Amino acid sequence: MAQVLVRNVEDQVVAALKQKAQLHGRSLEQELRLILSEAAKLSPEERVAVANHIRAMTPPTARQTDSTDLIREDRDRR
Image (cartoon, rainbow, N blue to C red; front, side, top):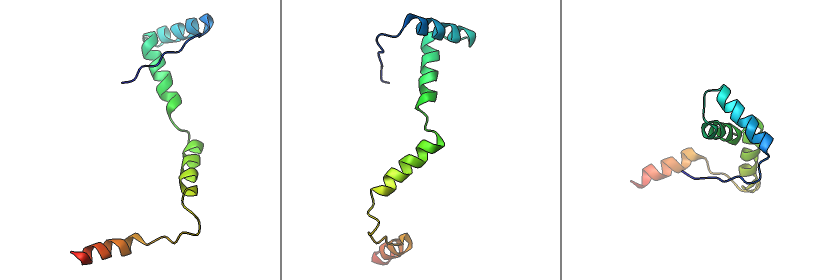
């Protein structure tokens, strides 16, 4: 697993995070790990944006081969 070091976090932010962790019965480290995990999840809008980005990498004029044809062609070679 990777480690992340965050410098210059305001004292009041750390205090609030410690209080939040205590409220949830977790250590500060556990609470921060959970917060970061949740923040890293893509929203539905972000997922669409990623899909659109990937789609944009394929030129619109490129002819797409039907996957069924490719599978049949592969089977016929055997």
